Image 1 (cartoon, helix red, strand yellow):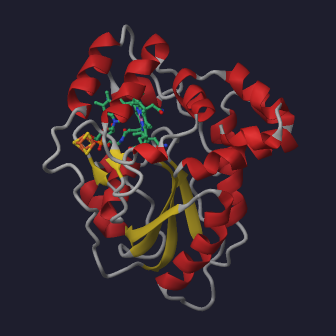
Image 2 (image 1 turned 180 degrees about the horizontal axis):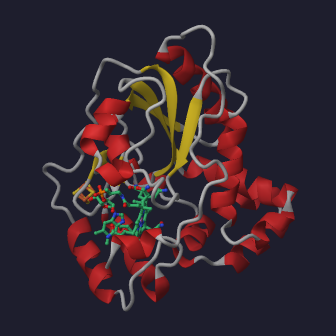
Image 3 (image 1 turned 90 degrees about the horizontal axis):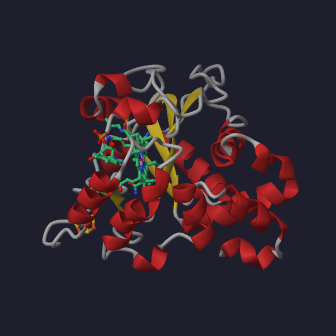
Length: 269
Ligand code: B12
Ligand code: SF4
């Protein structure tokens, strides 16, 4: 199964990767930016925030996945991700604006709008790259998560968070033209000592795939891909809501449409 087959399906982002703002006149410590973004992002469902330096990421990621340098090699890179906390915010956005569900990739489109609404008003020079972007703007976002100390990269190709296990998603990398952190945090290795039931599950999913899956369509074998995540003993309480699973794995848009018509409390399902 080829990587390019998956990536060619990804949608381009609205922002093609240029700095969003002129340089802020006063240099600020990176902690100021991370604190501000965390305060804005967390209540909007983007409840995982990490930070590292551009040079640390670039030495890990293959060259085709490098992020743009804004000021210097030690620029700050902020990673935004989420647990199941994000889904109700997406459902609310669909209810407010029902035309969204008719778009080609409603979730990716909403994520772009949602993150730009957080980043665009900030007074610092910044560039956003989304996890769903295709080359030449693709990001090795799991490697960024590991370099930020947020989640270990497990043997089935899934990031494993120490609390939420594989039930996390990464949404965007934001480069800021200020010096990033000196420290180089290590994500806790959740996999050493585990019998790795995710590995045979991944092998089953790969051999069951009749055609190359793409980022936007895992095909008829989507339940086998789901079984890879379900095999992991970490973070079982953090499993995504059923409707979120049906949308991300089976691309079940009808479920999505029905959800937007149901009572608000069902948004958590
Ligand atoms: C292309 C892609 C795929 C392709 C993989 C093709 C391939 N041979 O690598 C396909 C379509 C098969 C796929 C499937 C899935 N993906 Co995917 N995918 C991506 C994407 C867009 C790019 C991966 C990449 O090129 N990384 C860059 C390279 C340089 O990194 P790498 O470390 O060398 O490669 C890693 C990834 O390829 C990863 N991986 C992810 N899926 C798969 C599937 C296979 C078969 C293999 C071998 C590896 C793999 O494992 C590698 C690390 O060991 C990322 C988002 C991103 N920007 O990173 C999401 C991403 C990795 N996928 C994700 C998910 C959740 C899935 C699915 C569960 C379906 C879904 N969309 O919900 C399935 C099953 C994954 C599994 N391992 O069980 C999440 C993972 C979250 C997490 N906890 O880690 C990501 C990070 C997207 C996100 N927004 O969070 N995916
Ligand atoms: S099943 Fe075990 S080895 Fe696999 S990702 Fe989960 S903790 Fe790591």
